[in-house]
Amino acid sequence: MPSVMSTRPARVGSAFAWEVAKHTTERDREIAWLLYRQKILTTDQLRLLFFGSLRRCQDRLLWLYRRRVIDRFYPAGPFSLGKSQAHWLLDEVGAHLVAARIGRDRRGLGWDRQQDFHEHAQLSHRLECNRFVCSIIAATLDRADVWVAAWEPGWGAIKPYWSHPAYEMARPDASLTLNTPFGLVVMAVEWDRATEPMATLAGKISRYATTLEQARGLRWHNVCFVVPGERRAQRLVQEGRQDAWHVPSARFWVTTMNQLQACGPLDEIWRCLDEEARPFGMADFETLDGAEVTPRERALGRRWQVPMPERWAALSPLRTPGRPQDTPTAVAAEDDELAREWEQRRAQERTEAEHERQPRTVDRPWVGEGLRSGAGSGLLDPQQDHEQEEFWR
Image (cartoon, rainbow, N blue to C red):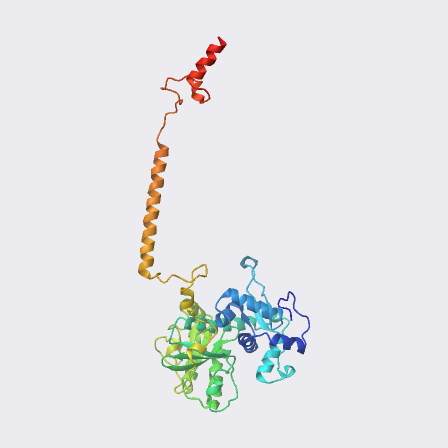
């Protein structure tokens, strides 16, 4: 297989898929698996989850795109905003990698390549929900005691903690697990875009209750509703409080998109439907005791980020080893010396400029020396000049 491919192959056979699979890394296969589970992700989201720099992310995604592991499209937007960033989907070779991972045949994977996903009715809903979860992951990167361990569609991240299988009367848009100093938080996300009446949204509380009762879960589930505005949030609290009060297996939380944008998902912006109390943060949600904790190094957004502060600190801008004497004290002394040299140079330049601005008298060079004009040229001295005059007489 050539190292550089300018065009994508139109058809993918098993031989080509096998040849590409030999050149993929574990991170490439994880990207394909996540796109299979989440359907669509943007360049910034993949960079957050798998790469340390945007340039490296773009280069690797382009490599996977040219080999039909992933596909992309650019949604239409206002002309004044320019070209939007790429939205990535799973492609044919990526489907082969996923099928090999779960031990199925490609035809039995239950996946079809979406040709017109940019016109899909649920595209905006999917993008906004994924953006919300990625904002949680990004917010945890600045905290050492909170991290996201798993992210799955539906109940995927919560099902491993159920004692019994349950019929899904309600299916959340996403589920994730969050490690906090108080324990493991498991939560389901219900992303609302105000496309359905309030009675339908409030009725999901009772359907969530039925599903969780069949799973025989204790009160460690958290169901988070995100609604567009404050008025819709207040209506949900009023109409859903009675149902939430009678659900012993979960707590229901609500916030607005404006609060998420202003404060962030981890801040104290979540109101509990069955309690009249102050808003809470995600770290204050109900926790699951005794659950196995995912190591922080394996968390989403951290697993593929390789911290190398010692390496970069030892390198200069020219990629040469740094000097051992570059301590803070030595660097400060060197800065002071450079500042003094700069001031001296500036003072010298000012002195020269003042000297140049002083008025001068422009005189002929032979004035005051008793010389004639012929002597000023330097071609003849006075004796030679006199002899020349005597000759012509």
